[in-house]
Structures are given as structure tokens and as C-alpha cells.
Length: 178
Image 1 (spheres, helix red, strand yellow):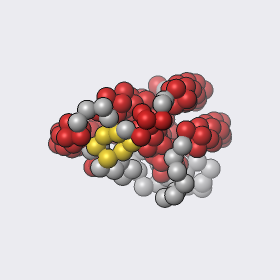
Image 2 (cartoon, helix red, strand yellow; image 1 turned 180 degrees about the vertical axis):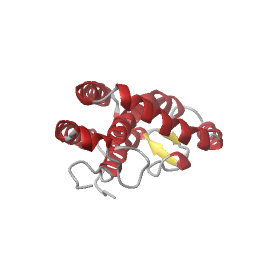
Image 3 (spheres, one colour; image 1 turned 90 degrees about the vertical axis):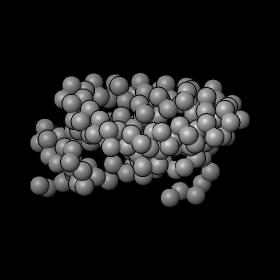
Image 4 (cartoon, helix red, strand yellow; image 1 turned 180 degrees about the horizontal axis):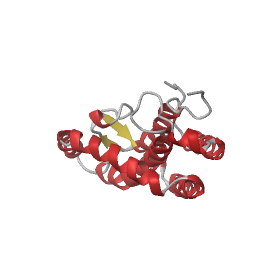
């Protein structure tokens, strides 16, 4: 785990690093690579690539929620997180099957365009965030993802996308012998 403070500058840099890496992965992946199983998941590499992108879509969609919850009394987000915890199994099923289906339609150059657009939106929003907003946060459903913690600041939510990406990046088998 990185002990460096999470700042808008470090988040911007990691988004640029991930963007370059994602482009390289998509360009490098052969059709056989895309259909080959990843390591440690039930997804193919192509499905996992979509899931890695999807992590940033989740961040984009979480931002307004975290901004709102960060302004409400702390027990509100705690109760909300517990409610989400109750839906963990349906969440995991939806997460798995939706990424499998979406990867059939959104792949290759289209996936790169969607990824780039999402990163651009995240960077623009990040640049506009006041420091006080980045420090506010909410409780999270910790069983939904290994990188969700009980309470996360808005800055940590921006950073979460890259933690998720890097985790799954290690599971890709693109370029590895079968």
C-alpha cells in the first residue's frame, strides 16, 4: 500500500499512467489474448479489461453520492453503507454478468475512447474540487470491494479507481503463454 498522501496532483498522475497503460494493453492484445482466461477470475482478459474501465465509471458515479453524504450527519452514511452491505450478493452477480455482456459490445478502440472520456471527466472534476470537499467522505460497503474501507474521503474515492485497476492489471494474462 502506498503511504504517500493522496493529492489531486498524485491522482492526476496516476490517471495519466493508467491511461497510457490501458492504451498499450488494448493495442497489444491479440484476439487470442482477449479470449484467454485471466488469472484468478472467471473473466476473460477482454472482460477483465472492461471491468478495469468499469471501476472508473463506478468512481464517476460515486462522486456525487460521496459529496452529498459528506455534508450529512455521519450516521446517515453509516446506515446507507449497511443497507448496501445487505445487497452484496446481488451486487457481485450484477458486477460479474454485466461486465461479461458489456465486453462483447465495448472493446478495442471503442473501449479506449470510453476510457479516455471517463478519465478526462474525472480529471476535470478533480481539478474543480475544493480541498474541503476532498477531505469529506462517507462510510462504504466494505464487502463490495477489497479496496473499500469503512470510511473513505472523496480524495480516496478518486484514488480507488486506480487501486482497482492495478489490482486487476496483475490478473491479466495478455502476452503470456497459454
